[in-house]
Image 1 (tube, helix red, strand yellow):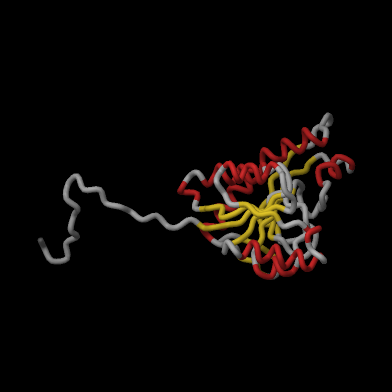
Image 2 (cartoon, rainbow, N blue to C red):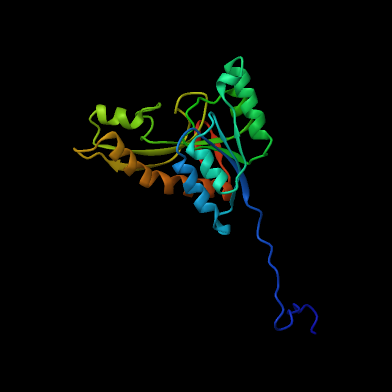
Length: 219
């Protein structure tokens, strides 16, 4: 063999290529878990680069936990009412999340405001069914209809101490139709929300998240 030549594997030999380890995340849910299901489906593709380490909830018996269990993902429940103070709950939730050592956390329909212990230890991405800063809070779809909005949508942002006030990563728009109800509009928002969340979580896992001067980006 010439000096410097690269040796070739014998014909018929299978050469193993080690793929990068997927990035581990924890997902928090409070209800049906449709955003969670979109992430579970995406992780079936090894190229997506994400592994859901655990799914946490603020109440037991919800569909989101059933979806996680069906996918073989560990779950935990951390209820506010099981703790003497909201601060104690925040600390307990931070510890439950930290047990799984995620790279970051995804709030996918988690209907509790996260406290300083969770936010101090973990970067949290949240998905919201409106074009923030318009219509923050728990009733975004209802509020958009009540305001007579002709366009709404969804937002993925980094969570801060406020209510849906954190730096925006990306948004997608949805037309509000004259005959829309809260249910029909929400379903059309979900149709764009799920792929947007999946795309951004995958990019964040592969490329990282940067938050500087109140602005968030994925390099």
